[in-house]
Every structure is written in C-alpha cells, then in structure tokens.
Length: 164
Image (cartoon, rainbow, N blue to C red):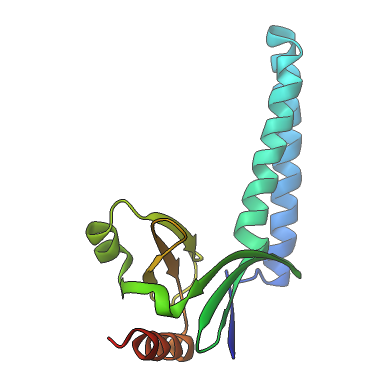
C-alpha cells in the first residue's frame, strides 16, 4: 500500500502573521464599507457582509487547509479530501476499470462527456495525471498529482490489471 498527501505549501511563521493581519484588515474594511452601505440598502448590507466573510473563509480553507490523500494498492486508488486531520472520502477508482490515462488536456479531448473529479493543488509542482475509468453508469475522469513513486506504482498496477 502506498500513500501520498498532496497539499499547498504552508506559510512560514512570518507569512502566517502577515496573513492574520491581512484578514483582520479585510474584515475591518469590509465592516466599514457595509456599514456605509447599510444607509443606502438597509438589511441587505448585513447579508452581503456575511457573504463577504464566507468568501474569505472559503478562500482560506481552500488555499491553506484543503489537502488530498491518495492511497493506492494493486487493485484500487482511493482519493480523500482532508481539512487538517479530518479526512472525507472522495472516490475509489478500481484500477481494472481504467480505460485510458494521460494528460488532463488529452483525456478531456478524447472523452469530453466524462464527468470530472479534480484532486489537485495549484502550488504543487507534480505533473497532473488524468485517469479515465468506468464509473457505475458512465465514464469519469480523475485528475490527480502523484509523485514519482505513486505514478510508477499506479501505472504499473493499471497495466497489470488491464493488460495494456
């Protein structure tokens, strides 16, 4: 069994302090702006401020807290989303059901109707790998960013399972 955790680069201590100050400044500026807007649009300004805060929180969670965990055996690749230490199941890809693999662009051109699962991080330097597989009723594409050991293991196991 092989396991890989994929996440964006974590901020240094100084960057973390700067990030906290930036969040505080954005919150204070948003509060001042929406307080001024409340005179013109009323209660709607409060709802917009809440949405503004949710957008900041979503950005922070997505950029700094979200990671993916790939776990591979000879039979299956399991993809989980993780927020900190809390893992959430995303997909099981049975390697004997893989139809094709390659770059995401090539697989999107060859299988435009396939539904996509993207389990990649923007700041990660690993090359993405797209796996097209038979889902319960149709084709699906999983885009992952495996390291060299995981990539070699997956491609070897896929070739062995499918005979390609």
